[in-house]
Image (cartoon, rainbow, N blue to C red; front, side, top):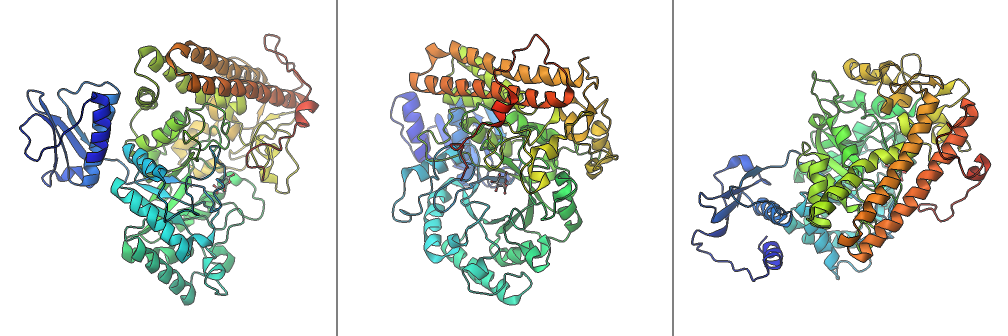
Length: 634
Ligand code: BDP
C-alpha cells in the first residue's frame, strides 16, 4: 500500500512523498485497528479530523488499508473534495472474482483482446510486470480472486510443473488480496493419474484428488479452490458414472475442505437429448439438489437461463436454492455483444439482473440477495491496453465495483471510470456518460429487440443468422429460439407452451405471463405473438420490430456524433481507435437490422414502413455472407 500511495501521490501532487513513523497530526495517517470489528477483513475507514488537516485511513488488515488507499486515490483522481471525509466501506459480497477462459496454449476462448496474459512458458522464472499490474488493477476495484484457466479445462494445469507456475502467480497476487483458483477437469484422475475411472464415489478417485489438493496447498497455502464445468458441452462429469452433480461437487469439496478451499460448480448445463426447452435445463437439474451440497460448494449460475444474450430475464435458479450459496456469473468478454469492436457498457445489464425481484421471500427479494459472490468472465488479453476496445475496460471496472457494492448505480460507476480513464472535463464526462449509458440498449435494439435471443452466427456467434437451421441439435439453431412463422414470432414459455415461467415465483412470473402486460423488453422471450399484436406504443408488433431495429442504428449514429464532439479533448490515438470502432459498429448495426428485417418480413408479409432506410441488399446476399476471419472460428 505504501508503494501504491508513493507512486500515485508523488505523481498527482508533483512532489516526493515522505513517510514518518510518528505523525505530527497533519497529512494522511495510516493505521491498522482492531477496535472496529465492523470493518471485517477487507473494509476500511477514511475520516477527516475536525480541522481538515489530516485524514485517517484505518482498517483491520493490510488488505483493508490497500483498498482504502486506492479509494483515497480515486477520490483525488476524480477531483472529489477531501474535506469532512467520513467513509466506512466494506464489501457486500465476499467473493469477487474474474474467470479467465484462458487455455494453456494462451488461446483465450471468446477472447477479443489478444492471447492470454499468463505466459506458462516463461513462468515461474520470469515475472512479467503485467502480472503485478494486473493484481494492482484488480485490487483497486476490489476483486479478490481469479480463476486462471478455462472452464473447458485441461488436466495438465494440475501437473507439478504447472503448479510451480501457478504458485509463482499466487505469490505475486497475494499482497494484493487476490487468491488464485483453477478449473478442475473431472476426468483428471484418468488422464493424469492413470486410473480407470473418475467416479466420484470410488475411494481411489477420492484419494487421487485428496493427494493432488494436498500438493497444491503445500505450494499455495491460500489456494482458493476449483471452478468446475461438468457434464456440459462435452465436458466430463459425475453423470458419466450415473452420479449427480452433488456427488461430484461434494467429492472435490471434501478434498479442499481441510484447507478452507471452495468448489464453484457451474449450473450451465444442458442435456445430450434435445430438450423441449433449453431455458429450463439448469433449474431442472439443480433445483432438486438444493440441500445436498457440502457447505463449501457454491453453485455458479449465469445471469440468464440461456447464454449471455444481450438481454435475458434473470435465471430462475436465483432464489430457488435457499440452502446453497450461489455465485453470479456475468460475461465481460462480449461473445454475443459485438465481440471486440462494439462499444457496449455492460453495467446496466448487470444491474438489471442484480436488481430483479425474485419475490422468493416477498417483494424486494432481489437477485443480489440470493448471491454470495460475483464472477466475471474476463475480457482481458495481452493487447497493449488489456481489453482492446478502449471502452471495454469499463466493464471490468464495473464488475469489481458492483461486486463490492451492488447498490451503486451504473451512472456513478461510469462517471468514476470516465474521470480516471479519459478526463475530468465536464464535456468529456457528460458526453462519455451519455454514450455509455445508451450503448447497451442500442445493442439490444439493433441485434435482438423485444426479447429475441440467440439469433447470431453458429459457433463464433458473430453477426446475424436468424435463418440458421442447419445444426444437428434443434436448440443450437436460431429458428428454435425465435419461432417465426406466418402467425407470428416468439417462444411460448407460458402454461400453453413450455411453461418455463412456472420455474419462477408466481409473483415474478405474473409480470411476464400475459402478452398484453408483459414488458416489451421480454415479450418474445415468453410469448409467440401475432404480427398484428398491439404494442404499448400503439404500433403493431411488426412495426415495432422495424422501429426498434432502426432505433438501434440511430442510437449508434448518435454515439458517433457524440464521440466526434470530443475530438479536441482526447489524445489522437485513442480518439481514432474509438472512432474507427464506432464505424464498424454502425455498419454492423445496419447489417443486423437489414438482415433480420428482410428475414422476418418473409413471415410477416408486410412492408418495412416508408420512413425507414431500405436494406441495401437482398436477403440472399446476407444469407451467403461468410466470415472465415471471425474470432473463434477455430
Ligand atoms: C458459451 C460459450 C462457450 C463456453 C460456454 C460455457 O460459447 O465457449 O465454453 O458458454 O460457459 O457461452 O461453458
